Each structure stands twice: as C-alpha cells, then as structure tokens.
Amino acid sequence: MRQRTVIPFGPQHPVFPEPLQLKLHLEEERVIEAIPVLGYVHRGLEKLAEQKDFVQNVFLIERLCGICSFMHALCYCQGIESLIGLQVPDRARFLRTIWAELARLHSHHLWLGLLADALGFESLFMQVFRNREIIMDVIEATTGGRMIFCSCLIGGVRRDIPNDLLKETIARLDQAEKLLDQIAPVILAEYTVKERTANLGIVTKEQARKLGAVGPVARASGIAMDMRTLGYAAYGDLDFAPIVEEAGDCYARIVVRVKEMYQSFDLIKQAAKRMPKGEHALPIKRLLPDGETVVRVEQPRGELMYYIRANGSKKLERVRVRTPTYANIPPLLHMLTGAQLANVAAVAVLSIDPCISCVER
Amino acid sequence: MLEMLGNVIKNTLATPATRRFPAVQREPFPGTRGHIRMDSDCCIFCKRCEIHCPPDAIVVDRQDRTWILDPNRCIVCGKCVEVCPKDCITMFPHHRAVTRVRIREIRGEDDGRGRRLEPMATKEE
Image (cartoon, rainbow over all chains, first blue to last red; front, top):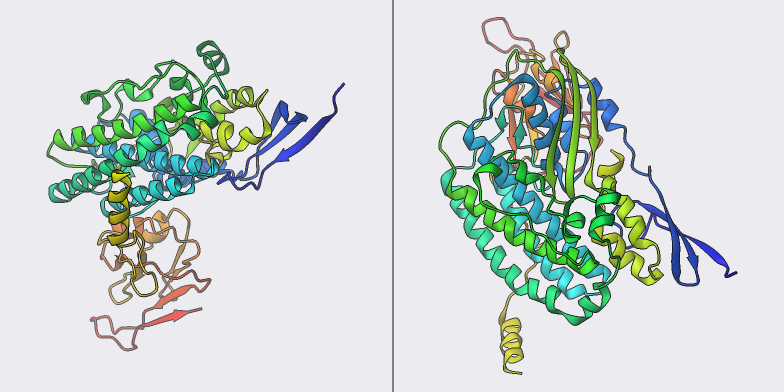
C-alpha cells in the first residue's frame, strides 16, 4: 500500500483571498480525499440580524460579503418587501438591475484576475484589474462606495442615477467592454490556459445535479439554472438567456464567466435604454413584516437564498442565508478527488470562485 | 511581426495606467461616502441619529449637550444624514484617516433666545 500524506492546504495560501482550509489526503501527488475545514471568519451575523431592527439589517446584511454586497441587500430587501406587501417603483427595479449587474461585472473581473495570477499569467492579471478599476469608478460615481454600495433600501433604492450620469456610465462601460474585447481572447484562446484547465475537474450534468451545484459551476455542466430567469428586479423585462456550456471542466467554467461578463454589459445597456421615469423609493413608515418567506437571487457565484421569519415586530425572528459557495463545496470536493496537487490551487479551487466570508457569515 | 510592432509603438508612447501616487492624488467622486461631520450649532439633541445608527457609533447626551461619534465603529452608511431633522450632519467625500479618537461635539449654553453664551467646541478624545 502506498503511503498517504495529509497536507493542510490553507487557511493562508497565496491563491486564496480568504481563509479556507482543505485537508488534502495525498498518495504521492494525487489527491485521494479532500476535507474542508470551515469557520475561520465566522462572525455571527445571522444572530446579530435578529437583534437589530429590520431596517438597520440592510446595512448589516450588506457587510456579509465584500464582493457581492449588493446582492445580499437586494435579496434581503426583496424578502422584507414581500412580507410587508410593498411593490417597488419601476425605476427602482431597473436601478437595482443595473447595480446588480455592475456587482457581477466587478466580481467576475476579480475572479478572472485571480485565476490569471494563480496560473502564473501576471500580465493578464494586471490587464484585468485595470479594466476592473473602470467598473469600480462607475460604481463609486453612482452609489458613493466602491465595494459596499449602500444603495439598496426596503421600498426602493437610496439614490437615483440622473440621466446625464447614466449616459456617462454607459460611455465608460463601453470603454471597459472594448478593453475586455482585447483581454477575453487571450484567456480563451491562449493554449497555455487551455492546457492547464481543459479536461480538469470535470463535473458531469448528473453529478452537478446530484451534488447540488449552483451558478456558473452548474451552467458549465450543462444545467440551464439562472435565478435571474425568475424575473426579480427588472430581469423579467429584459432579454437574456442563461449561458450554458456542456463540457463541465474548468475551461468551461472560464468560458461561462467570460460570456457572462459580456451579458452583464448588455443587460446594463438594455436597462439604461428602458429606464422608466418616476420615483425611486417608497416610504415604509408604520409597516412591519409578518410571516415567513424564502427569496432567491442570482449572485455572481450562483443562487443565493434567504429565509426570513418575522413576527410582526421590528425585530426578525430568524434570518438564514444560504450562499452559493456553500452549495458549491460538494462539487469542489468531487473535482479535487483525483486531481494533481499542482492543479488544486490554481485550477480546481478557483474555478468555483470561492467566497468564504459569505459561507461562514 | 507587424502586429507586434504596432503594440511596441503603442506601449512606448502610452502613459502608465496607474497614477504617480504621492504627486497625483485620486479625487473621490462628488457623491462618495467618505466621512460625516456634525455642525453642533444647529443640533437639537433629538437622538434620532443615535436610534437609527446601525453600528451604534453615535451617542447623544441631552443633559450634557454632547454628540459623540466613534469613527472606529462608524460604517459611513449615511443613515444619520438622512434622518437628521435639522440637516446638521453632512457627508463629505474624502476619507478620514483611521483613528481611535472619538469626536465629541459640545454645544455651549444659550439664553433661550438663540443667543450663545458659550462658544461651541469640538473635542477629540
């Protein structure tokens, strides 16, 4: 029998932006088993959300995660709005869509940069981050914050995007899209990237379904699952279709995410074109949530689910958050089994785009 | 080869994508949430900012006529700016350096007709 070695992979590792530990059981260079160890950044935010009132919770929930903060706020606000029976104004729905897509864009740019860096493709990393900076500037100009948008509110959005700023935003995004046109072929056609990622960490359609994969991981395995098709915010009024790849390997996941970036640019332009006039927020005075609800939105990493239970008072009874990375850990463990140690960091782990602070809340 | 030549010329003539930082500072956008400041002259110590503040960073004392902000707790969400009935809390786009110092705004006594008997003061503690 060959000797087994256990390597603690993480929590501090150059490719991880956040602390995740994987105990890798190796036989020579091959991973036989991977055991995740979570809990390094647990902050007890779900418990804290039960102690603050439901309006203050929006600010708390936004700080659950840095990269997809807007999606958390959007999901929570939608849940509370359904509990108090509030219909958001049309303009707020479209503004929410624009910001959600901007969040997706900057998240995918971050991921692409980190992947390029992990592959040892440092110049691509810099190019991607230069492009991301344009999107961050757009976010700062429209919301007032670079990472934490603070723009979603129960009953609408906190600030409007005036039409001239909207035009400027679209012009800047056109510029970013042109730069992406130069970067995207490099990552998609470069043979070194293909050699490192193709036929690696394969998750077939059946396995993805069985393991409960969500988001780009599921879509790369041929499952057309995109929560945006539920039509929340203004997605019901826009034309798009989930991007699906069949191969199920790491390369397919890259392709899905790069195509989604283009889709996001397109969705923002569509939303800006069809932006209705009118107010952007409704008052929620003297309305209190009662009952329980489940809300789902599509985060950059996949399906985000909130369960909210309220009892007619200012404080909520329970807020439960199920984040996409949590759902994608079983597929990750499946991908790691049989992988070479050198591929674990760069390819397998990053291809699910892990967001640990989301998972541990 | 010719394609590469074009790139070489472009890159030689192009300016760097980054700023020359200490010399060129990045200016925040007009609506950026940088830091809040309170003008104690118009504050009526109604405590609305304290009640609404999500991280409990503001403490208002009616008796002492003080308004204390803990910048370390403040998440610069701007909720206090929204709820202030007298609009005396203002959001500024520039970020304040990280500090453990609390900002205490003290309003001096007035004679009840708006005439100030003592000047207002901002203390850092």
